[in-house]
Length: 591
Ligand code: ADP
Ligand code: MG
Image (cartoon, rainbow, N blue to C red):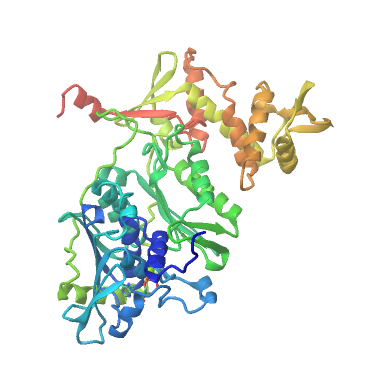
């Protein structure tokens, strides 16, 4: 039998380090968060070979007092909480007191730090948890930590690292999130000697989006804002023509922490569903401010899953806020010279008016100390100018008399000239959307009429479908359905909303119950109806049908009356536009 023995502390530290330090990106995250917690207003991150060989974070924050330096590297040493009760009210990003001890257990670490009140700074070198140097040094106020040769003493872990380029790409994404979550801090990011990203730290989110994602993305983002007693939401959301094929650009922060939340993810999906094609995802950068007593944070060191006490309220608010914002803007995609459904992300370096000095310059400390004093009185949310555009748009009532109806082409598209653009309307998508909104409107006005089914439709439901039905029964009744238990697993549908009459109930009804039974949060009737309506485009005028002048114009009239005429319920565009100048470019009239 093998011996049971107590592991020595170096081994225990290495194991614990694995929890916090998985790869260079986790080191960067911990160190950047420490700098933010130290009230720094300028932070630089420099990496070489993806941070594996070299990773430096320099800040102009509080610094660490000489007699506290060694203590900071002990396990569970933290200045941020004192007892378990403090956990509930913690506002700093870190508080487990594990990062410095873990990092120094698996790398060669050099710390340079100075607090304002001390004359000299401190240099501390610690390699694989062993102290190598502890001495005076001349440094400005703030802290620099250099991490060299990550996992040099844990080959098993080092083996699992990817190439420097891949590791660097993780860090770049982290850096983007850091810049977005702290627009008031000036960040600089240097990769293999080149400055890759730089932010001014002026709290202007528009500047940040411009510098991270480029001009074309920035021009297609619109501000959103919501405020109630327990919830503030601010941010920018992309117009539907700005799409990605993954969720990576749905970025949100709760009380300035980058967190994971299935409710927010679902709300974003739902809000954009009718605006985007399947498998396309939006850009959204959202900042939530929620009182901490309404949050339940499962604090795992690497992933932060957050739960909300008022899930349903949050979900419905996000969905409505985004839908309303998208519906009230002119969202007609313009056809440009370069084909492609979406704007490519292009990085542009936003030229700050003032160059951000490297943290070791004395001048910079003075500038930023002034700024940090100003910052103290500032609200925690970033500055976002909310613009309320008033324009005569193609779809406004006042513009209608100025429309020049050209005709129908391919028995499918209606052509209208307005000002310096040619608009093409997909007749099927347009009619589908009109019917869809009409259904929702009738519901809101309490005008839902029922149509009797004769004979009634008998359906066999699974247990989970039956559960969903009983949970939402009153909502179905409000919408104009009449459903009764028929015995066993069978249910009879006696009537359906008039607007849905003629559609195959057995198709949409089961699908609907299925979606509802997998729903985590309670769905409201609007989204239930939206689902019903979006599965049913049967009644809409087909593509390939010749329309008379009167029919075509009646369709356009109807289109003007609806809330969101830009996308069909499946997310396809209803209208696209060609500008005169674009045509002139094609004919080489202008270059
Ligand atoms: P935690 O952040 O969870 O408290 P860490 O191991 O990351 O634990 O850091 C330990 C302590 O060292 C912190 O609580 C803080 O007091 C101090 N510290 C770390 N980094 C910095 C920094 N950049 N500036 C000032 N103090 C720091
Ligand atoms: Mg920390």
